[in-house]
Length: 68
Image (cartoon, rainbow, N blue to C red; front, side, top):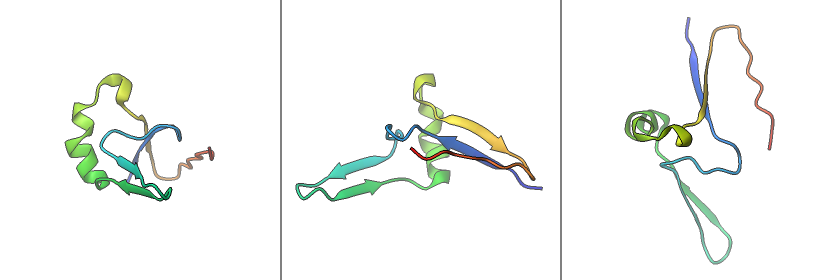
């Protein structure tokens, strides 16, 4: 059976390693690494206060992530 590792940040926080740019017209451009790249290249170097909220979802479990 497989498991899924979740790592989430509050909606008002940009995760480390993710770039967000807003141009003069208000268009938003987001650059983000793949999940694998983020866990291998960004995650190991995060300070404790910069780490995401994490958990592992096991087979048969349901995860509810509220909006906002």
